[in-house]
Image 1 (cartoon, rainbow, N blue to C red):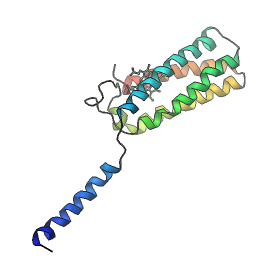
Image 2 (image 1 turned 30 degrees about the horizontal axis):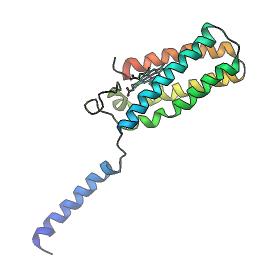
Image 3 (image 1 turned 90 degrees about the vertical axis):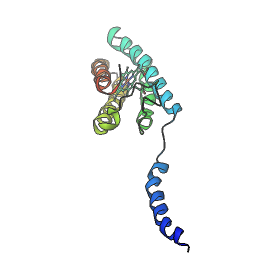
Length: 155
Ligand code: HEC
């Protein structure tokens, strides 16, 4: 083996090892970021409609309310995977996601999990005809939107 190769091969080998995790990590794409924004916009629309029906109008039409709550649960399941990788603002100026999502990942994941759990519980309450419990949880969940946005979303 030429001296040149003997000295550079270990370096190349180490370089490959160092680059491996970068290559193996799935990068976030513009489609992911746009889907995230569209999903939240849709959640916003459905959540307001659900709140209006159950809290403001005190509707006892469970089936009607469950059309919203079911779709909210399904949409929210998309969210965790769409925050797997950081989406720096320099690359994705359309996003309002703050770097704190990835710097304080445990806190963010906790709030997101809690949000998903609340949407599931709202749906369960409606399913059982527990309209006032559903209404109270809808109000608490509305506060959790703001709590998360205060720390993790740009204004
Ligand atoms: C666990 C944190 C968290 C919770 C809970 C949460 N959001 Fe958000 N929301 C975000 C983040 C982060 C973004 C920014 C996403 C982006 O722009 O990439 C966002 C974006 C949005 C957007 C705007 C999309 C845009 O950037 O134009 C709306 C509307 C929205 N959220 C509504 C809601 C509503 C309504 C709720 C509660 C029913 C809610 N969110 C709960 C974190 C959260």
